[in-house]
Length: 489
Image (cartoon, rainbow, N blue to C red; front, side, top):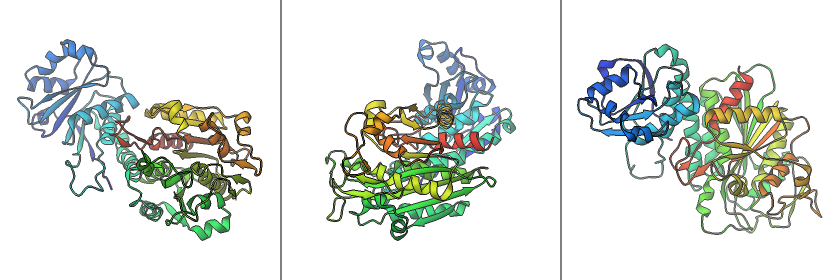
């Protein structure tokens, strides 16, 4: 598993800057104003920073962008990275600056010299999140593990509490990325469950429901998806009990460890990307790890449905009718619309067993959401404005793109079946919305609910906001913040 860079907070020591071996990153205001640390770097480099800030190149830099100076004279560092950043920058803006610094500086140990203020820890978190490289399947790594990050500030006591959360956040995000990046022959349903059982060491209560258990519960839509695979279907229940006696908030993830499309077979081109079809379950797992590491004062239950969708003599067929745990019958028009069948049973089970105060499901559910929103935003569907707005506020604060999409009876009518209670697809028009409406059917009246379609953001072919190409870990930061704001403040 990938280990995040350690982050240490230290009091400003101007004399130590010259001797630092690695990359020194310094923030300079858009008007060229420098703090004491930046002035010391400028002095050590014989005015190089000041000359650059007076040049057109500095003027052309957007806020948050960087300029590198390799092998600066007068310093032991291999590079100085200047970031153009407002003194008041905080949150997502400061974090984005940290991402840019780490991208420019590579894997070497990093000394961060930010402006004074609350943006310092956010910048360090950005640098920590960007320093990720999935190497589990390489016989020989291409590079070195990312070096430690030292955050040097005038008043360390003002940022230590916030900086102390960086490791919990980074570990949760990295856990998600490692799961999503893992190939399907490595991350089988059994291996996925085993990795989640490891969360017991952090105080999470973990229970694995096997196929016999799921059969007794009546989870026939979930079991139907996996019946063509040699890998057994499972549901893993993770409980973090950090609050009082109140009912928990529920997080529910689609965990299709590989999706061939089943009998409705996908085209060969690009099918290798379907190792990431468990992205929703990966995000739920990462959130649960973060909550446990930071000892969140909230009750949260995470449930993931783990299956593999394969074409086999035992696989479900288009035209089959299966019965959900709720009791609704589902006509399977397309076996490649399998994620909603998994989530339907897990959503119902979560409500029956835990009576959650609210719930969020996450799934790499539809290609339609990518057509609508690209890779910049996840689709957000909800039956509750209060819960939805709380999530959107958290996502904006964390710099993770999210856009609310509609629901409505007109879309639900598109799922009407001639021979069953509902069919699993409604045709090409509004494909992501009809998928959400299918799930909506399995949400009890009065239960606040959000469905997040993360097909476009869970894994990308180019750099995402906080990560190199590949798994992004999208959603861990936003859901952690939403839980903190709603239940711990």
